[in-house]
Length: 263
Picture 1: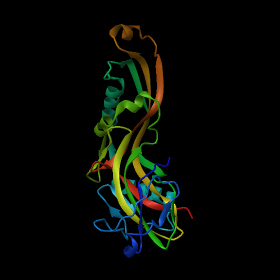
Picture 2: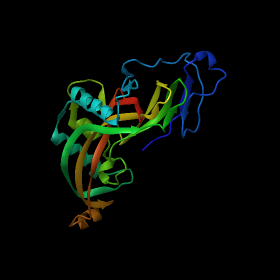
Picture 3: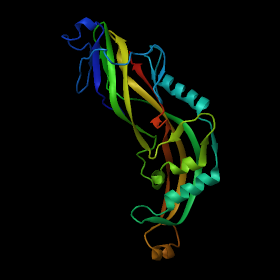
Picture 4: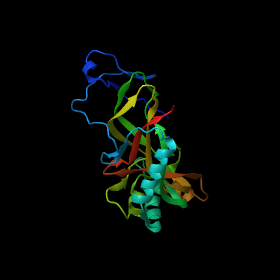
């Protein structure tokens, strides 16, 4: 799903910046502004790692699948983990079946891990509306807080409430320091960069992330008191769902961000 960003257009001819209209046209933007390069980061000629977010220069050959493959390669290279199944399950049961802030808990809880937690790609999605460069050269500026969600973050299931603690107890990154998990299935991050385009370029800014995901089945009785627990002779609830979190590096959702051509 595409999320509207503040898209900022810049002229390639800096001398005319102060008086001319924007040269990059966003066909559905809410606002556009003209700014100079003064005090701003110069667009990269190669990937730039901004402490967790890797900005990729625009490339005619790049499509959504290219960013996905780059993230898969990064996962294979940097995100190897050691999985401690008993620790993970014990922590997951505590979080899913234990008492919540309202005093509810799952009595006689039975939890089955249907698929062990694995790290995988959150596929590339558009984080801007469509962009069209309508003059000789222009620069699209990206300056927005973007929400990063896991693949099943909208799933209605008791397992979604487990948070990051079970992952932190049951999984250990073995190759690279600085990696961790978001506390919920959604995490926000601030983006700030520029992408150079030329006349006729059409596309959008795309972003790919990584997540950790496990599928679990939970059954038991939802209770608030001991009488309910005694009366629980057969499960009154049975749910299958995903326990997921966004992969972080240095507290930032691990991302690749780039301009994706559509023409």
